[in-house]
Structure formats: structure tokens, C-alpha cells
Length: 316
Image 1 (cartoon, rainbow, N blue to C red):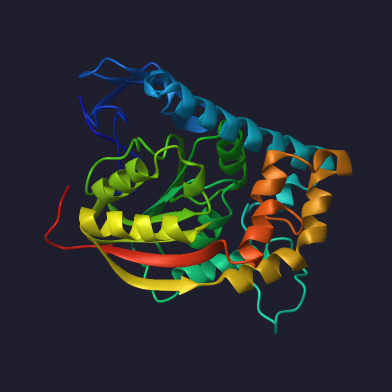
Image 2: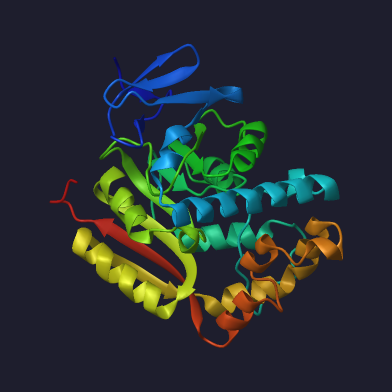
């Protein structure tokens, strides 16, 4: 029996249910403690869901299935529109009044990632991105930040299939998994990144628990999302109780709304036709005219970037 590691990284893959070591054999990963097995799909990607889905409540399972269906349909729309290989991000983006309309479909999204990572030294870091989507952040981190390794994890198999096909960096690895039950060993990540995903989690506190568990003492949780103000307050309180300290908080609601205005045409093109636009993913992306956009505009929701540091005297 051995801890399964990706080459050239200190991040360990474990059973997401009991957090025990895994044994690899015959294209499967077996937990010898709870006897759950996990498959390895095309390209050597671990599929770390399996029997775990049976442990969710009926409501949580339905919510997660809806998320998978939503992003699977989005991938299909991109394929049909011919824009798939260009569309590597699924986020609001960031723009200022001095910004020009983006010539590149991903420019505002890359700018948002840069804003999220401002002030951090990621050289030689082992990073976990939870909800990596179509891998845009993984790709940019590998190209520009000198990190040691990054694991991109996402619930949707179609997202990870795209990531695996389009990311050729030797220090990037991908995994299909659940944010509320991370298949990652304790105390092995220098940074956890999560952008625009946590509002879709049935139990956001379970996600926070897992982030705390996998981070090393002194590790950084980079967190960016659009949430109701009360949810930010509750989350910050909970993270503090876990053993995090808030080291940066920045409200960028105006900048992401401006970006949404700028990239609206690109997002319409991504759906191919108008009859595909009244969908869950369309509303989740915060396009002008949707409820999410209007709630951001009138102040019911905010978009924040936050950095939390796991206090050095805390382990798990």
C-alpha cells in the first residue's frame, strides 16, 4: 500500500470518504480501509466520485447533478459554436474604465486571475484549484507564476476532459472530484484557489473544512466569488473559527460588472443561438439582464477577492 502521488508534486491523492491511502491496480484506485474503488479515466485522470455520490442527501445529490448537467451542456454549446478551444475560462472577468474592450476572449478573465493572485509569491508552490472549470487558471499559473505543481479538480467530467486535452504543462494534473470531499491528503497544499464556485455547493462549510484540512500551516486560501453580503459575513466568521486569519479583502463588484458588459457579445457567441441562452449556465455567468447581474448592480450581492492564511499553530 502506498500514498498515490502525481509525479513532481507533494500533493497526495487519498480516498475522499475516509482520507486513507490508496492502492493502484488494474486502472483502479482502491481504498483498503473502506473498500471503495475509484476508476482512472482517459489520460490517467482519477475519477474520485463513484460510490461517494450515494452518501449525499437527496437534495445535495440533485444540486450536484444539476451542476454537472449545466456545465456539460455548456461544453457542448462551445463545441457546437466552434469556440471551444478558445474558451478556457468560465468567470466574470475584471475591467476598469481605462480598459479597452478585450481583443482576446480570455483577456478579462486572465486579468481577474491576476487580481486574485496579486501580492502572492507562488514560486515553487504546490497549488490545488478547486472547481478548475476548463483549465484557464491552471494554464496561466503554469505559464506565468513559476509554481512547482498544480492540481485542477472539478466535479464535471466534461470540464476535466477539456483540461486534460488542452493543457500540456508537465506540472499540471487533473482530477474529477467533489469540493465537499476533497480527495487530497491533509497538510500538503501551499495554496488553495477557488473562484466563482462556492455558491453552488450544497454545504459551503464542508468545503471550508476541507480547504483548512489540506492546507499546510501558513498556507493561503485564495477565494473569489459573488455572494450575498450575509454569506460573506457568515463565511468569514466560520473560517476564522476554523483557524484562518483574513489577510486581504477587496470588493471588485464594479470591475466585474464592467467586464460583463464588455464580454457580453463573446458570451452570446459561445451559445451559438438565442434559444440556447435561457439556461442555468447563462444566468450563472452573470450576463447583463440576468437576475444575478441585477442583484450585483443593486448591491444585493457583492464580488470579493479574499486571502486567508491558515494560522501556523493549526494543523487539522
